[in-house]
Image 1 (cartoon, helix red, strand yellow):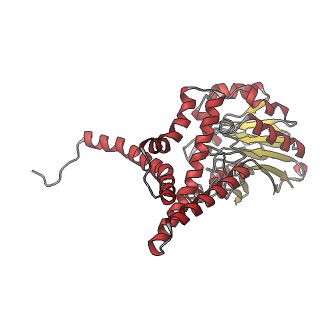
Image 2 (cartoon, rainbow, N blue to C red; image 1 turned 90 degrees about the vertical axis):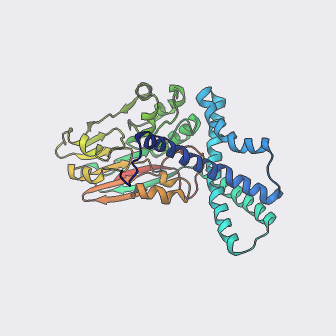
Image 3 (cartoon, rainbow, N blue to C red; image 1 turned 45 degrees about the vertical axis):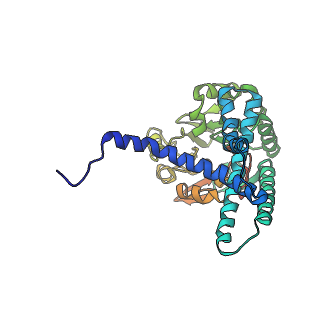
Length: 361
């Protein structure tokens, strides 16, 4: 008999199923429950009762799931509140963890610590919520042939209508029209909930310039065919792994995918237009070197939100080193938007919502 005990397929299957449950549970209770209970106990010096404990543990989860069970305006609003609470809890977790480390070496008064943490969390959350309502306009200059100098693209990305309202989209449209761009380019995640109506997206029809969109991961997650049809009915040109000519510009749009080879595999099926300035829209900042080798001059992406809430940006940067801003790869200029809206929590801390004005010069 062998000394090595083989793990049975049933056991391996059990642990594969168990692992994500454990990870999600640790994240949920560690991030949402622990900081709230810790601060509460520091201030009150007594454990929470069962009803209070259940409200802290299950309230945010139920608030989010209600929309899935009963889609309506009120349940979507409740879902937005629950997700914003998740962002506030992330801020709380970071501060409480820092306090725990300091408290290991320096004795701190519990009650004073509890109120101090509560004040800091409230202040940072208020700053983050206000910050999320105020998109900035960021102008970026890109070198281009003389015939195209002065051409301007307005880029919006990751608006996340669903997490955000149609009213927010209307404000974004007003800011774009005030700048009078030649084209409006949307690099995915315009929506993030299912059944977003044409009425809620109708501000797009008020844009004074032609609008072109590529799908992001959230369009893929929900009613992709239906949302593309609604957008087309509003005059939005949806580019699905295709290209078109706009005078001296070849505009290319590629569907979002988790595959790192997506950009290369789609571009191999498209014909580069000779002597045209080539602009590629792709949701995530992957495949830039493949795009450069194909002959793309300008690549516009989003997806990263620049981390949205610090220090989450440190984790995002590990997956997407080109997390935000302008990068150069050979002759290609890559611009990664920090996102126009917010996903989940309506909150930004250490990042800004932006509308990009890409000016060819």
